[in-house]
Length: 145
Image (cartoon, rainbow, N blue to C red):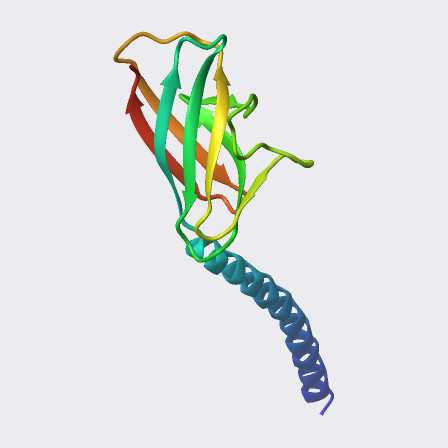
């Protein structure tokens, strides 16, 4: 009788321990899948890039459109792996806040006026990458003028 009582009490402890561990795991995974679902509804594209070599320093105009069903938050723009900061006149969207970001509503288009310190020559290839807060990226490849 004593052996059966000990076995049943150990089984009860094991079930209680496994239940709390599994409950914590399942709630964490549930949050992950909700966030991933929102990220999958986020879609944005780089529509066009214009080069202005005559400005000092040289400038890139990057047009980004939110084509998804979720509001997006742009957190960074890269050109050939270098982070670019939107500044200067002519931009319809500028980074603000801490950490800096730009929020695009559904269907909105933003023009980013980016300073580009390295000089380029005609025919250079540029990879423009725009990153969102949810981890999505839009890439645009262009040949310099």
